[in-house]
Length: 142
Length: 159
Image 1 (cartoon, rainbow over the protein chains, first blue to last red):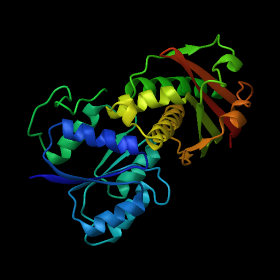
Image 2: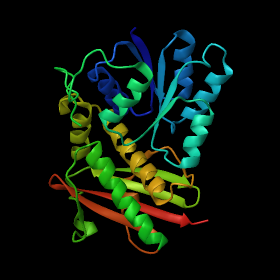
Image 3: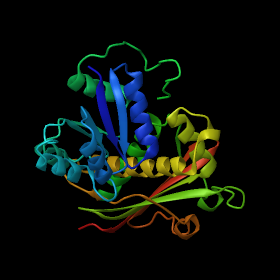
């Protein structure tokens, strides 16, 4: 099954790097979608069913937690899996994220392996074993 | 005690972010005169600022020469420098300060919740004049790739 994935982060380079890590990790990805804050993400989610949302927390306009809260209020979106990728690392904040219904949490700074392992937990094993994160033109520098 | 813990958290976080995600070789410098860090007549220096509150309130500022910022953005994204836009460079600089600040506070006190503001690019000249290491103002100068970076943290209120 090919996964359609939405990456939500106000940093263009961070969105590009996350996308690259996922592609290079060999997951069966259909389409990537991008948004720079929670509000933009909701627009995408209202137009297209996605299999996974990876979102930053600290973003202008609507942060990642507000996005999750909006999704949980929507019958169509409430079951969509969300992973938070964020610099926020306090125990209380992580518990707050989990209580809101996210299915995973990745702390920045991260390594490609940390992203891959978290996605394996959710999406299952990758189709292609490409170690260490190299895939022709999809070479990663970290 | 609080200050030494905070400085240690800052130092570890700077290393963690710049080495883990950007593969920059780092050396913390204590010999460079802050006024001789960069040739500001020649080099454009970017400054990113982030406000925070919680158990500590204040702001932090990250300084990086634009050329170096462009180079690490290209490396980070796996692209040639020629294809890197100003927005991508600014995005990387803001992401760096966001990660260093988040990591600093979660290292300093894992039980406490800090609220981080949205990083913004600010005037280098305005803020750089305030670089100092007195009282509740701390900074680190970092040598990397024949250039320098600086990270300053200013605590205005410790609750």
